Structures are given as structure tokens and as C-alpha cells.
Length: 418
Image (cartoon, rainbow, N blue to C red; front, side, top):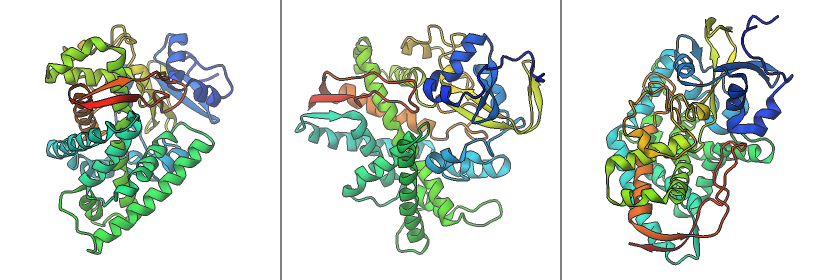
């Protein structure tokens, strides 16, 4: 008999297929069925504990109990994160590397990126007036690729923008994919690593000038705890881990437009320039719409929680999507209601669209502030700087596809600058 006799066990021999089929709802479906915050299952032949909710998040982000080393499958490292990157590090080495990322995400860095974004949106809108229609996701992806490279100090020709943006996007798309979509992401990563490695080498040998404090400079000359510089391959991987998530904000921008389209009653309030409401609307987009489905870690040392034995080395998945839709935290969680953030207390274990806990010490995304500011600037642009019509299209999105997006990418037509 299992040592976790009181813990619900999934009846299937292996649930890998069910995970691919149910996607974002895989953990939540079973949490509801078993009326428990956690359950045990098998994925790819391995025993796994899946859990959801605020208390589960609090436990999951306890670095004394969990580590990231060995949690991300090689297939995810080879497409999304890069092998042995910051996401798979722990302890002092992780904190040291994470501080490098945090130094690039400060308010002045955020401000500069947002200013570049505003200028690019304005430029893009002048062109859009001549197009029959525009797919917002594609435009956002290309724009974010262009400004993130400019901001980071990475040279990028206009003719290369779409190809590089597609590669960054394909790495993200490969996360929950098998077959051709996954292979496409791996090829995209190889191309991007080769490109960025060359740029790092150029900065180090002086053939490319880089400004001190810029992302390219800091990655090229970052020293590890042992005093050695990162090798060029690792420096490239980590620089991609700065650029790729910025390009991924295109998904949130697309869902922002969808949120506005599906809830037009909020347009007037957004037009009034209320900064607080703009932030509330943005946070509700991040809570309501699907982004990260779940996150994994391994048990660092055995412990018992909720009558469940967490054995050393065991893989544990935390349900990000389910926690953001937990009715105990969020009243009527499947309703889009920005007002819920008016008196929200800022608990970092309740609201985890990009991970939970403290970004400086833990594994919460260091680029969260950038995400929110870029989303706010983009939403303000969509609401207050352009007029457009939403053409007949398929705006549905599948929760079984990880990551997901409105199927049409959000098509706009008859765009005019206001």
C-alpha cells in the first residue's frame, strides 16, 4: 500500500495522454473530482504529485523544500528555456544569476522599453491604415522582437525581424507540443543560440560596441560566483531568456484586446485615462486568460503536508491556471471582472500567472513588471490612439493547447489613428 493512502490517486496507469488532451484543465479537473488540493498520478512513467491553491503555492515556493534542478524535462530545456539555464538552478548560484536578471528589469529599464514600445506602435499604426486587415498577435510579436533587441543592444536588421520573432515565438509554442510543433521549437532555439552567441563574441572581442548596463553587455561580462565569465553558449542562452519572454508578451496583448472586445462596457473607463483602472484591467487579463498552465519542481528533502508524504526527488506540479481560477480566492473566477483588483492585498501566492513568491529570491518571473507595463502601454494604445473594427473571425481559444491563443490572432480592419 502507498505511504500516501489518504491522498487521492489517479486511476490511470499513466496520465501523459490525458495531460496533453486536457491541457490547462488537467490538474483542476482532478482537484474538483477528488475535492482535494492535491493528488498523485503518473506522467511519463513517473510518480508525480499535482497540487493547486494558495497554500500549495506557499509550500511549493519554499526553497528549503523544493528545488528546480531536474524538474524541467530535457525536451522543455531544449525548446523553451535552454539547457542548464537560470530556471534549473538553485541556492546561491540561482540567487546570483537571478540578480543579474533583476538588474535588467528595474523601473528605469522598464520605462525605456515602454517608451520604445509606444514609438513602435505609433509607427506601425501609420502603416496599418494602408492594410486591408491586421493580425494583432503577429504585429505585437514583431514589434516586441524589434524593441527588445533594440533595448538589449542586440543588432537586428528590419529584414530579419519577422524570422527572429517567429523563432522566439516557436520556442514558447513548443512547450506543450509534440511532433512537428515541438521540433520546430527546437530548431528555432538552435538558430537563435547560434545568432546570439556570435553577438556575444562580437561584444567580447570589441567588434560590437555595447553600452554598460545594457542586457547584451551584462550577459557578455557577467561573472559567476567563481569569478569566471559565462561561456558564450550559456551567455547566449540567458540573453535569450531575457528576449524570448518579452516577445511572449504578444500573447497577453492579444488577450487584452480580446478582453476589451468581450467586455466593451470597460472601454469608456479606459478612455478616461484612469491609471489605476488600466492596471486593474491588465491584471485581470493576466488572471483570467490562460498563459502558463503549471510549473514543476523536485522535492529537496522529504516532508509531510496535508497528510501527503513528499519524498526526496519526487516531481511536483503546481497548477498556475487553476490557482488563478480558484473560487476560494477569486469570487466567480470565470467572470472577467477587473474591479476585483481594487482591494486585492497583493498576496504573491494567490495570483501566479508568471509564478509565485518573491522574484528576487525565488523562481517568480523577474520580468513581471515589464510584462505589466508593456501590456498597459499597448492597451492604452489600442483604446486611445487607434480606431478599428473587429472583423468576423474565430476568437475562441483551446484550453487543451499549451500555450494557447485566440485562433484568429485577433484580426482588426479599417484602422485609423485618432
